[in-house]
Length: 239
Image 1 (cartoon, helix red, strand yellow):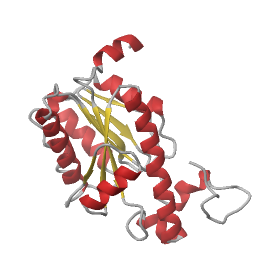
Image 2: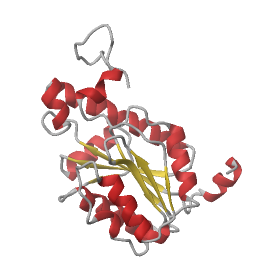
Image 3: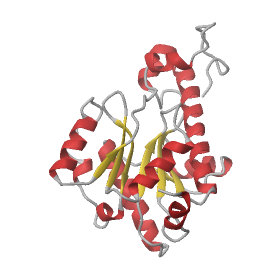
């Protein structure tokens, strides 16, 4: 799709929204598997870097007028989340709320779609992305937005059998479809496979993005470590 055409689709009245799903980077509140290997403090520092990197990439998309962004955070209350958002110049923030991952994602799709209606914006697509990807880039998000303007759903597969991005078109949001959020073995290596199976059963026109590796374990972290030192510190990894 030509850049000019893409810009005309993503005007200020019907821009897609990108929701960043993250956990508060406090010790023992994030990266539990990684904490077991490298300690809770180091794991929390990595979570902070990952979150900040994802926000930086998303903010560039927002500055270009291609999407609105919102952060949905877990592990802290709404007042603390608002203070954190103000400090980090994040305009929209929400808490994820209780439930499994499917429930939390469905809640963010519902709330974000409702907010658009309240603000009398033209309903448009919504994308949810994780914040566990050192390699996520500006191009990745542009590609997802472009594809979602033509498809009903886009999914970014991850190497662990889950996905790092899911985007739904307005057709699947009004009213919201329930099948992507239920009947899924959350936390297993079957999430992507089961989601694709349900999409096919529901005759959804979907597109897969590039497969990426979430940073969840010490093995995932190894490519980002300083090869000259196996000590973890704030300066021993670059995201």
